[in-house]
Image (cartoon, rainbow, N blue to C red):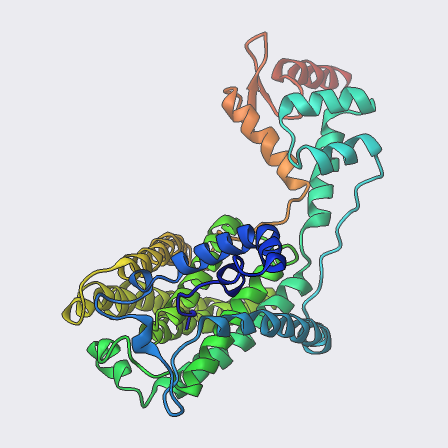
Amino acid sequence: MPPQQGCNPCLACADRFPVCRAHSLLVSPPSRMARSLYEWLWQHEFWLPPGITWEDMQESEDTHYPQPRDLLLSIPFALILVVVRCAFERAIALPLSTKLGVRDKQRPKAQPNPVLETFYSTRCKNPKEGELLSLAKQCDLPVRKVEKWFRHRRNMDRPSLSKKFSEACWRFTFYIISFFTGLAVLYDKPWLWDHRECWTGYPQQPLQPSLFWYYMLELSFYWSLVFTLPFDVKRKDFKEQIVHHAATIFLISFSYCANYIRIGTLVMVIHDASDCFLEPTKIFNYMKWKRTCDSLFMIFSAVFLISRLVIYPYTVLYNTYYYSMEIFQPFFGYYFVNVLLMILQLLHVFWSCLIIHMVYKFILQGTMDKDMRSDTEESDKDEERDKIREKEKNGITCFSNVTSNGYIQRNGSEPLDNRAHRANGHAKER
């Protein structure tokens, strides 16, 4: 627990010892400020219900409570997980991808061009029309070639299929281990079956070793995801993922310090349940096992929607908003933890909308649409699609054009009057 308030020994003896007074003048202002900030941060009014102080949470030989300093262990554990992940992907996931037929697409490389490369790396990866015209003039190239260069350059930065496969394998392995670890830890706990038990005796609920290690496992994993964010596959919901990781780390850390351990374990198990089906769906998608991928996607959708939109609001949100009020009055920690839980729920709603849209497409088309979160590969066919769209916008159909003489002309063919004259000429020759 945070240390009790007390005087600084150096300041206490400063009037009697000149050396100590000089030391206090040099050292005490920052240390006093840090101490004041530390004492303000750990006020029991922030962390504990009314009427409970840190003195009530003192440990004994047989009773242990969560210690904020324990959270520091998650940082080295996260670094260990990063090392384990690198070894897993190289030794297991990559060879497995080769055996299962996951092949990286051969991508055409962008030709070396210092002007375009400088613009790409310093300003923009997807230039607008005016910027394309300016770059084309600088490089003395057609605009279409500049567009093609940027398309190839963006594809070079996109992760390969084997990298996506390896990342999905690692996350699937962790989520399976974490989910069943959570079930093993909680199956005999009363609050798993009776949610009011989350608040029985709160906050004086002793910390069990199994709960401590389960918390460290989850917190270390999310720290490892933060450490590897610059190197992981970036999807279209990258910003939402950052918000999710930040909210999760804050929630796990705060719930540990405020001894919301019981409600925190429920949150972690609920989240891991659907992730166990998401990652294998990606794996089979990369393997191009279409039917298996579609089946797993439907299972994942059902588990996600039920766990995040039904079980989570009732088991967690309703529990923290209402059941907790049967034990104590609202305080800062009550509001703070509920704000974090609501941020997670908003993300659940956002992802649920994407999933429902994909399920709707699946029902209409009979096949799973591409992951709306994924950053898809660009190809030269995009250029042809752009041409067709431009023609349609200008009122020109892709099958017929009207000439200036009023004759109907098919794309790529001669006017009908010219063909008629030529036909008559052939008839005369015959």
